[in-house]
Amino acid sequence: MLESIARALSLPTGFLIVILTLSSAIRTFVLPRSARDPITRYIFRVSRKMFGMFTRRSVTYEQRDRIMALYAPVTLVTLPAIWLALVAIGYTLMYWSSGVLRLGDAFRLSGSSLLTLGFEKSDLTGLILLEFSEATIGLVLVSLLIAYLPTMYNAFSQREAAVAMLEVRAGSPPFCVEMLLRYHRLHQLEDLHGVWVEWERWFVLLDETHTSLAPLTFFRSPQPERCWVTAAGAVLDAAAMTAAVLDVPKDAQRDLCIRAGYIALRRICDFFQLPYNPTPGPDDPISISREEFDEAFRDLASQGVPVVADREQAWRDFSGWRVNYDVPLLALASLVMAPYAPWSSDRSLTITHSKAWVRRTNRTTSVEEKVQL
Image 1 (cartoon, rainbow, N blue to C red):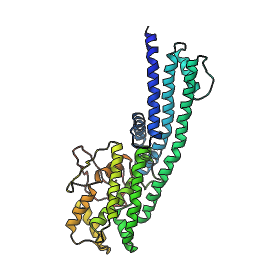
Image 2 (cartoon, one colour; image 1 turned 135 degrees about the vertical axis):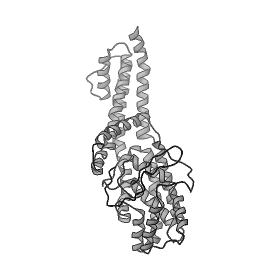
Image 3 (cartoon, one colour; image 1 turned 90 degrees about the vertical axis):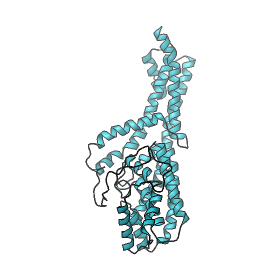
Image 4 (tube, one colour; image 1 turned 60 degrees about the vertical axis):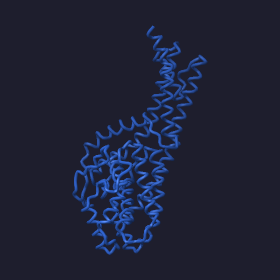
């Protein structure tokens, strides 16, 4: 009696497992929009914990970077294997529910059909239809991964091209003050308009790809000192410093770039359920101290960069811009284990649901220092 009940329940259970697995594959590989999937999310979380066991033993950032460089690719390749295993379990239950196969025979039939090996087959019409459907699903899952990887790496290439170019403009690690000083030395401050146009498009692409192709968030740059998060922070800070500190004509494109940037960072935080305050006030605290801002102001002024006369108003203006992306930027830097960069990954952040951050240090870290993340 118990076996009969178990066989009767195994049909809907197996069917549900297969449907949930297909839904997971579609949400992850096919659906062109942000959609969190519980199976994919769980697999990435477990994989992150496993990689964390190795990174905790590392003593330098370079060692951790080499380990974490494998995190997203290995997990991504693991996904189809886990999906195939779930499909095999689901069909095993459905075969077993027929009442003509033992559980071990049902599993062999499922594996033979899923991998199209053909060493096991059934003569019953109903089971033959299940075999055909399982073989089709197995081929589809493998094909999805094959088609998905070129899309992923195309988006990765577009992202990294801009990140690599930023090294020429903002140094390595990228810093907003260095970026503005280089443009000033080249007498090209007026050419920053083109930079804002270029990076507004980059932020829009980032918003689209890093939510619809979520594993791309964890793909690390070819060079360990580069990272899309620190690049985003340097450009946003450069735009905010230009708007608040530089005595140059107002550029609406600069403001649009900042808005595109913080919207993109917030959308990615939303996808990964990282908390932040969606409506920060201009007087809310930011992770940049007044002393750090004053030092940056003096560096620009000492190099002959045209700066505004009212430093107090400049600080209020910069803080009002930075507060829009401060928490999302630092949260994402922590999420992806970003390399050292001033004003982004060089400071610790504790996020609370009440809308604030807590600085653990006010010390300005020099570019030359090694950071043990």
